[in-house]
Amino acid sequence: MGFGMRINFVDVICDDSLRTVHANGKPVGYAFDIRLSYYRGLFLSCVDQFALTVDGQAVNSQDITFGIHGKSIPVNFLSHCASEFWGLTEPASIEVTTAQGLEPGAHEIDLTLMLRIPYMPIPVGDNLVYMPLDSCGRKTLTLEA
Image (cartoon, rainbow, N blue to C red; front, side):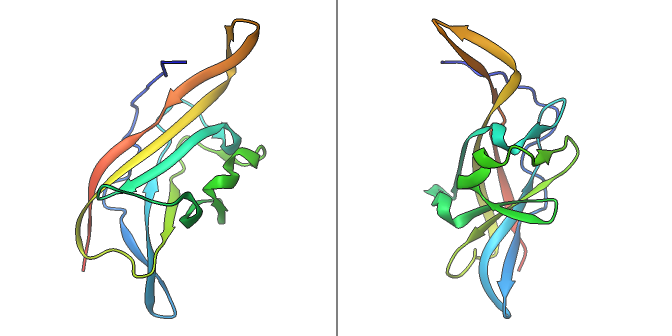
């Protein structure tokens, strides 16, 4: 399928949300917040594609967790979260585990977030697929020292 619906209600990547994650006083990664750019919430199992590039470098999906409702879910498991609902106004926290975190300064965040709309089936030959929703975003965020 070569198209996807795109509705820009909000910026997907939240302004001023880039921060360092610490454990035992040492940086172990970084995090930022995202929002759903759609007119209603969706279950996390509707995430079809999730990829992250920071400063031109692809981030390994095994190093990324999706935080919502006090839970941290590895992005590789989102397709199994059929009972976890991402509400329209709820920001989710994206956390990346790295050996040292990010240096202070500006960083280009490029998020690929493709969802499917479970109530919009599309017949394709003898099969049904669901309307893809492009909820991707790109933004430069600054990490304060």
